Image 1 (cartoon, rainbow, N blue to C red):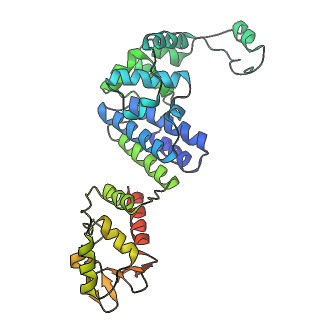
Image 2 (image 1 turned 180 degrees about the horizontal axis):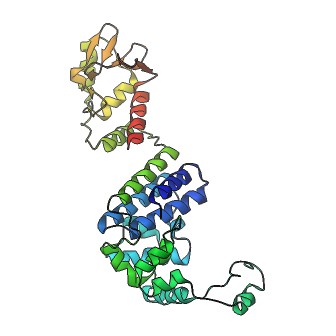
Image 3 (image 1 turned 120 degrees about the horizontal axis):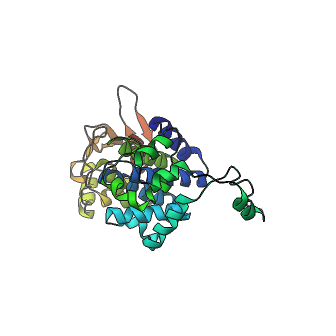
Length: 328
């Protein structure tokens, strides 16, 4: 499998495909990450991808296990891992012994050149029974536990059938223990998960509702903890000292968090007790590059690239959150 080509196609499907295409791609990628990496890391990458997909789409995770083989694959992986992630609570528990027998029968099924030609026709079963059959080399390799042969046979596939691989109970323990039949390497699963999550963020941009949600989202993206809110007395004292009433949106921000620490591209937002006035503007950051005007606009001062005026302080923070999400 060409890793770069796979990732390019996967990101394109997540960004531009219709919803069934997106769900199929995320489902395949999650199984790929869970089965072809090095131990616990890829399982965490797979869980992270599924959790984010579920959060932004609102669709049930049964969409990612909507046929017998994929449902079986996840069940076998959870058994081999010895745990069941929280997102999998929606999946129906399976009788793994019965599933193993069904899967062995599936692997042993002979294939014909006429497979699929008469699907949906009343004669499909008759044709399937009468048509000459041959063993499927890929399935045979899995039935024999030959991961090297399976990898060689699927090397040219744009999206190898990892569901059938993971559903093979005799192999899942080896996969979870670190077998990497496709040779993806230790770093690629994390890179793949990050790229697809970034694409999901772009397709379904975050739109926090309340001030608490907005501040929490910024702190989460930065890996920081927001300060506690300012008291009403601290806000009133700042307004007396500045001889102006702060814009209501900014007052709501202070009621949510009394300033914010700096990050690598954004200055420290001052607590109420450190706000300063300069003429008819209020300086709300250190260094003094974020200003509130008398009309309620929030201005980011940048002498090199030019200043930007946002209609409100909230609009400035929403823009900042968007940049944080894009950088991830």
